[in-house]
Amino acid sequence: MKIIFFSSQPYDKLFFNLQNEAGQFELVFIEAALSMQTVSLADHADAICVFVNDIVNADVCKYLSAKGIKIVALRCAGFNNVDLEAARSNGIRVCRVPAYSPEAVAEHALALILTLNRKTHKAYNRVREQNFSLNGLLGFNLHGKTIGVIGTGNIGKAFCRIMIGMGCTVLAFDLVANKEMEALGVVYHPMIEVLKSDIISIHCPLNEQTRHLVNNDTIAMMKKGVMLINTSRGGLIDTTAIINGLKSGQIGSLSMDVYEQEEHLFFADHSAEVILDDEIQRLMSFSNVLITAHQAFFTAEAMTQIVTTTLNNVRQLIKKDNLGDRAAFLV
Ligand code: NAI
Image (cartoon, rainbow, N blue to C red; front, side, top):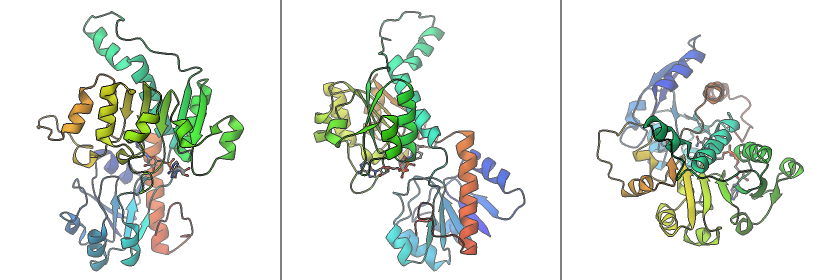
């Protein structure tokens, strides 16, 4: 059983090889991202394994099917990059890792909030330059602040628990209110109310309903000076609108672990190149913007769980076993 890994990084190789010690699978790691231009690299595989920015569109599905490749294993939770209908109509099974370590992402969201607020990234550089001044480092207490959470699934719930522990009031918007969260003190409101929070953190999937959920209209509904955190998917935020919001001061600070056009930048070293994306350059120029490059999931615990679930998913697909789990098996 040969699995070709697209967009693979040294850490993918390390963690997957570790769990494939018995050699059940032949694992081949390639750096290229999957697209119509690169799909032929999978020609002799039995399955492919893809990540967040690999493109599994209708053309790719048709190609894979023609080559007899009927398994696409996502080694991530989000699946907005896969055309599920095209997979279905081409007889391709698609699986993913529905929950590996929600805490990893929720804790990263907290790290972004604390860094933006207390400016530890700036303090670190200052002190190294023997500048011990506090001017410009003023933050605020998180305790007592109102946190708006959009999406209370696995990650949103872990994030709500953390913020309640910090002494915050947590308001949430989701299509379905979660009883466990309500019992903890999370109060569900329509989105328009949640947008008035001091800090907003987004934890819903990217789909046709949520694309550009943060746009000129919703930014205008937010509290002036709001802190906005996005660890979900870049397409949830209209980048042009957020830049305007930052320029006007309506957005007080922004941190994102994901970016609308990240597939051209993230997971690679571009330090010796000229970046042609003017929007990310503009975002990086704001002193109140903090960007990380899709690393929220990146803990040893999460990587181990991703590998276990991905290889189990493939085993089950081969055995045609236990495929009723809609959370893991999408098609
Ligand atoms: P989940 O499926 O457990 O939860 C998603 C929640 O969003 C559900 O409660 C759902 O009802 C809600 N939702 C759906 N549509 C909504 C809408 N229109 N408005 C408000 N809520 C809506 O997913 P999970 O595991 O919590 O992950 C959330 C997202 O986080 C993923 O879709 C993925 O895009 C992103 N993610 C990012 C990672 C990173 O490293 N930055 C790692 C893992 C996931």
